Amino acid sequence: MRIGFVGLGNMGGPMCRNMMKGVNHEVVVHDLNPEAVRACTEAGATAAESLAALAASCDLIFTSLPTPKAVEAVVDGIAPNIRPGTAMFDLSTNAPAVVKRLHAILAEKGVALLDAPVTGGVVRATDGTLVVMVGGEEAVFEQHRSILAAFSGQLVHVGPVGSASVAKLINNMLLLCNSAAAAEGLMIGAKAGIDMGKLTAIIQNGSGDSAGMRGLAARALKGEFKASFALDLAYKDLGLAVDLEAEYGVPGLLAPQALALLRMARGMGFGQLDTTAMLKVYESILGCEARL
Image 1 (cartoon, rainbow, N blue to C red):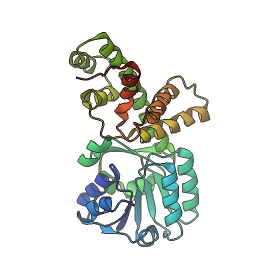
Image 2 (tube, helix red, strand yellow; image 1 turned 180 degrees about the horizontal axis):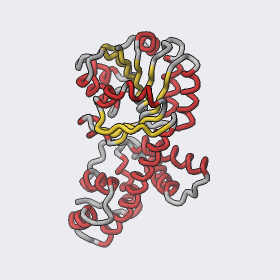
Image 3 (cartoon, rainbow, N blue to C red; image 1 turned 45 degrees about the horizontal axis):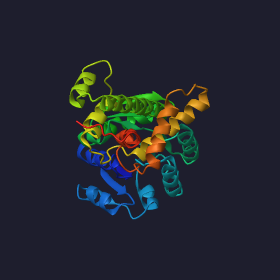
Image 4 (cartoon, rainbow, N blue to C red; image 1 turned 90 degrees about the vertical axis):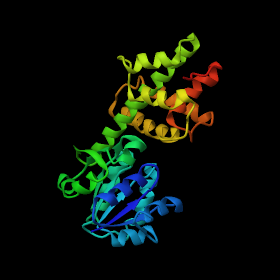
């Protein structure tokens, strides 16, 4: 089998390299960043001359891309040359409506598209222990389970195409809302003069703990804002979740407020920093840093 992998960024690169370690198949890669391509070719992959060439020669294709528009552009690039019987897994955090539309386009060509977003961050992408949630034909999922398992610690078939994207957006919405609440709480502590190390220890061992809180403690409270999960991408993901709230008539009482915080952070120039840089909005407004 020949496997194509498009999108070799912070998440896609480690996933691709772990897949190469875990399966005995030829892997062909494509990315706009030559350094990202080189990191995979040095591990044994072959660089595709173009998206068209990749599509024409592969039996299985993975995409890991930053936005729905990027996924659409890649599908436009591979669709004319993709072979009937090919399976495609989109590992991106995508809009369910976009996934369903692209699924319909590729189905006309005899291609099965499944949405397969992941969660766990760069650390677990590197360790090969991501949670991979999949929406689409269960038989296709089972056929390629062993390949997905090469970069995951847990595989979940969620349901029909698009359902995994819904699950991923809900997951990220909860993370970001928890992060926003944690940032607000930590700033209260900083303004009140509480020892931030003791406050953090209390929260992390108490009922207020969350993955969002732990991310802030590991990064923002140490003044470390190099992007693991870039704030710009978090803003995109949360915006898609808020769109789903509107689509299904769910009252948006929390997520839109967290989205507004991220919008402020982007407006203040923090978009390329880690998502935990949302804390810097409070720090800038209040003239007070929250640090361990």
